[in-house]
Length: 215
Image (cartoon, one colour):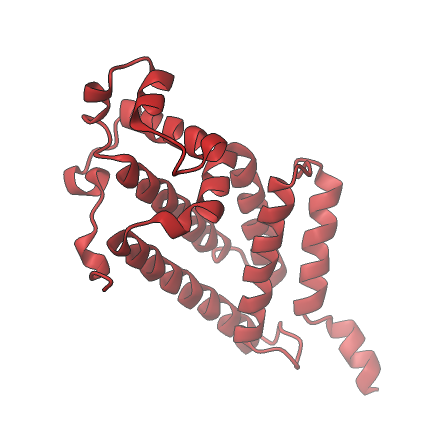
C-alpha cells in the first residue's frame, strides 16, 4: 500500500541544506543511473565517480533510493519553477515559448536527470512516488490556471478548453524529452522555434483570421 506522500522528506529538505558536495553526489548518481540503469548501479560506483569511500558517500545521500528520489523531485521542481516564470509573461504565446525554451535548456544542461526521471521513475519507493504525484498535480493545476486566464483574455482558440491545452503541453513536453534522448540536437534554435511555433499556432487565437472568417 502506498504511503502518504508527506512521509517522504529528502535529506536536503529535512536539513534545509543542499551543499555543493551533496549536489555533486546527486549529479554523479544521475550519470551512473543514466549509464547503467538504477538496478545496475551501485553506491560503490557513485562513490568511485566522486573519488570517495562508500562510507563517506552516506554523509551526502542516504541510499541509492534517496538519490533517485532526489533526482526526480529536483527535476519536477525545476519544471514548476519554469512554469511559474512563464506565467509572468504578458501573453499566452510568450508564456508557451518561455516555458518550452526553459525546458529545452534544462534538458541540455541536465540530460542525465531527464533520462533517469523518464526511464527509472518506476523504481521509486511508494512515498517518493506519491511525492512526485503531488508535485505533478500542482504542476497541472498551475498550468490549467494559466490557460484559464488566457481563455478569459480571449487568447485561446474557441474550440479548445484549458484542459485540452494542458494535454497538448504535457504531450509536447514528453515528445520533446524523448526526441532529445533519442540523440536529436535541441540546441539548434531553428528546430526548437519551429516546434514551439507549431504549438503556439495550434492554441493561440489569431484575431485577424477569426475576424476574416466572421466577416
